[in-house]
Image (cartoon, rainbow, N blue to C red; front, side, top):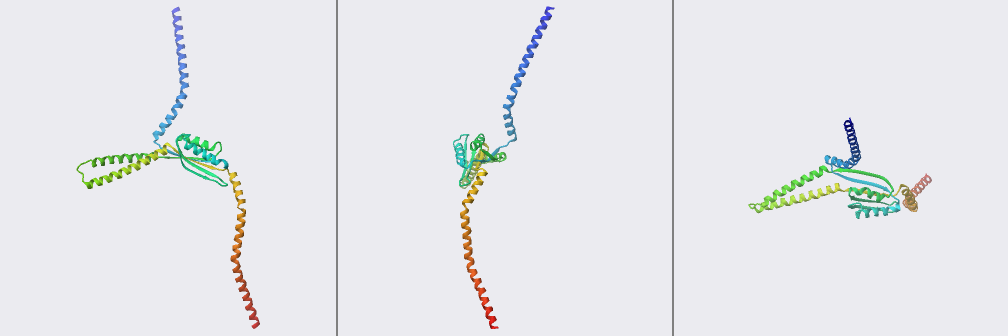
Length: 273
């Protein structure tokens, strides 16, 4: 009887240990599952993009509402950040600045994808983003065709070099062959440059920042400009009236002379009658 109870107690203890072990493993698995799914998500997204075979070239256009006095400083800060590589490799492609009563500026750069948002944040510094437009162009087909073209040109170049190494070629044939080789090499170089430019558009993104004053400042500037032009407008109107008078004065003299002559002839006709 004691052996039966001993066996039962041992079986119950083993079952309890197994249950505790299974529950701990389940807890560890449930805790690790979100981390695994989070870390695997980018990999799956990249795999999906690769399966689609897309090569996207992104372009961003951002309009920023900046106080008129701060536009030069914001433009300079964004330009220095790009030239200094603060947010990664970056190149300034274009810069435009306009002063006067309604100042504005624009900056166009090509920057790595990770530097787009930080550069926008630096240029804006909490100011209102009036608009932001992002679009992409798929270069997969173009890049594939360029790769096929380069492969074909390399094979043709290799075959021509083999022919050029033959000892039974005549001088005329050698000249023709050299000309064809030069043409193939020029085409290959052009295809390589085009392919490098396409890859650059995929690896980096085009960002255009436009700095404009708020509409209230623009309205005040227009009123000030109108007041400043008041004197010029009055002067222009007076000058136009003087020119018109100068043109009409001779014509009026001629008309009055004709009227006086007609009346004079009528009076003489009546006296003669």
